[in-house]
Image (cartoon, rainbow, N blue to C red; front, side):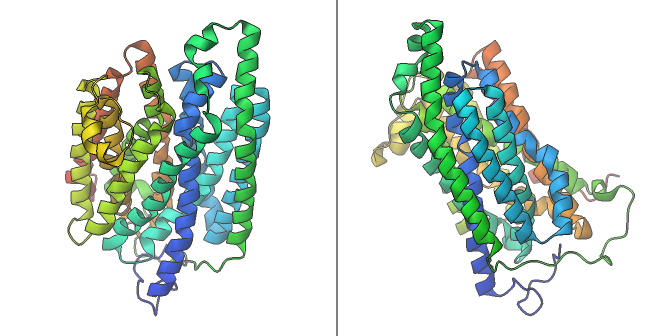
Length: 444
């Protein structure tokens, strides 16, 4: 990908109007990605009831979804080398539409494996889109403002994350009290199966609508005039190296940092509903909105502060430190007192939650600037290896598959609150990358 041409006379997307148009269009893509991604936070406790699962089993939802980024990242990069980005987005939306359709037979059968196949298919299409649009946003303008542009895209992505749990709760979790653990335990086997089948049917209409919308947007993208960025020419600025993309420590360490970041982001966004249900929080179905709301606030800070007041590196340092502090708060705060949320949210009339849940939601604020900061730091200086580096970074999204599963195992084996200590070493690794790791340019 071309990284150096940023003037309007040399870069097709360099003119201000073209950049703004492209950002608005790609913003729609980020909204779609956010809508599908953050639906998982409400889907996990929902499927736990429908399929009669424990926490570890329910978090296979996140594993099936995020492992697709590892499995499909390199094939996605290969597809994008053969065709333009717009065609890649079109194919990605089509695959996502097929994944949404697969939810219909899954809901009708209440077969957990079919839900996982549908989620994997959805995420496969998303992988192709992620592989294209993230480096596109980095390269479309000045690199020093890349984190700001990604922050704007994050507003679309996490804004969808605020809306989705509210919509899901309205459509699918109405009257969920009748499906509580106590209510289900009081039924005989036939009654439980009938209740779960009835609840599962609520998924059919929303996912059918999602499929129609995805196919419609696929057509819109196909006929759009979204500007493209030319591929890196063969006579690139870097010599061929047998180590290939792995010769860059800033990238490899960035992949590790991104793996940790996505892991803690998914834990904060997708386990908060399960955790709230364990604590008998009445509005557990919308708790993902709390985390996403904090992330939106973080992205607004990024848009306003980067790079004018805060460099990408300093933003990452501040985010990692905040992550360590809020994680300590999750593990040590009260599970019954509501003082923190009353102070922070009471003025807005938002229902209060236990302090430990509020600290978990505040991790959204800590996590918001990590993705937009890590990407440009990790891709710095890669030249013709940028596309391969982007594929590796997309593969790091598999942290969202692995880390929540580890949390689920720890929660089932012990205590769901203390299991959140798992995030402390992740934030410590991100802090190392922010301070030193991204500066390393040679392995020796």
